[in-house]
Length: 471
Length: 107
Image 1 (cartoon, rainbow over the protein chains, first blue to last red):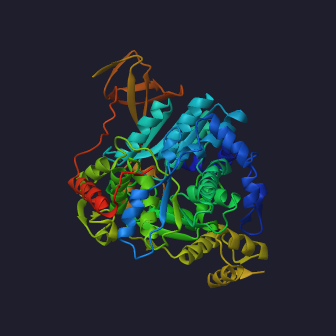
Image 2: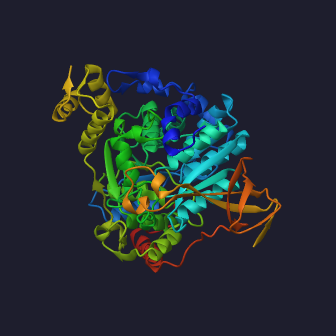
Image 3: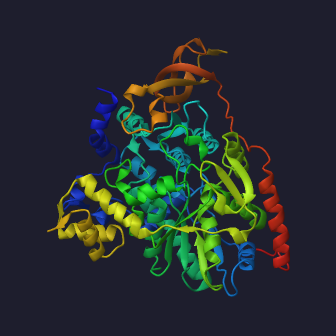
């Protein structure tokens, strides 16, 4: 078989179909639409069954803590009567140390059930360790493909740690230099091994997170007699937002605001060999968060089950320095040494809580384990080695790839709001360009409106601006 | 270093030369090859760094490549002291004591 780049990429759809066991074609309709809930129905288990499957492999039912000391300090810097109560879901308590265990558990369970001998995941993040830990428990093989080094073979410490952890669970780790052709290597491995594609973006991966959203709001309701006012979710590829929000809705918390948060890495090119080691976060940042919001179907499956614009009420960014500072606050005030990348949502929650009423509740829905390489000291030392200035000051002076500014105090912590309407317009533009349409049907307008949580009028108006007629 | 059959080693391969790489890459990435490293147990009776060898990975795949490391060490660590963070932690602890009488009664 021809293994050249062009030949393998040409066989992409065929390889994908075999490796996920989902026929995406039958879900498509109109000019560009597809049946999203139909895609999610590929998961033949309800929430209760999913929770049971997850508990078999040490996933879920993690503790929910109120951060009273942190809330007290937030109130020092908030106007009188402001400063919402901050809660955190300690997802580090899942077996491999992050919420990613929820995503991996269902994928690996399903892969084994339908007869696959192994699973492959393309990920430089916690997801690799999660898939490896689940595969170890279910007795199937696991390969993790990582983008980890620049062309000098200098690796991101955070990713090196994740490679170690994957190996600790007995997985094979394939490590690559920077570049989107990771996808090509991924495809050749799927073809060679016939393993299941444990993509982050299948319905299994998303349905696995629904238990997280459900647990968060159900527990707050039980303890406090009301649903939380907001749930803050670190946003990268979109799965965390999508799965959590679906779980929140399934628990009946229709008024709880879904707020996405990413680390601002504006200006750094994600496929650049030079920029690769100038960032201090390898996930949870705008380099994934924005492109995956404005076009989810850029992922490793034909139709992505992670569709953040369907659910987001707000999307905010924070700086790298603010997240490192937050990581320090969490350890020093609350005795929880976690993160740092997973603390992106906590950094945003601190800033948001200052504007909310005292009796309101804001929940941060994850923590992640910390370790060598994956630690503020390791990551800031690495940043310095790569010429990044680290200093105490005003976070507004933070420049991705140049300066990391640790706030002087909590009062300086803030966030930047990303206008969701701008993202919605980009999404529509991407949809129009990808499917190369000059006209769409009424059903497409309905699909787009649902897919980006917008009115049909706004969708039709925007389509018009891009020269697309609604028939 | 000399490696013997069965030892844990790392091999390197060039997956795509700069000419073979995907279109639309940033200039700096386009100039360098896409490289790959895999670890496994050495299949050859013996080999030294730079030799073309075969390995068996943890999933029992057999992969060919250039031997680059024997018993590869995990080099990542907890980094140097970062004074800026130490100071932050020190300060917020003091601040909390001023704000909350009886801080430490946390659940």
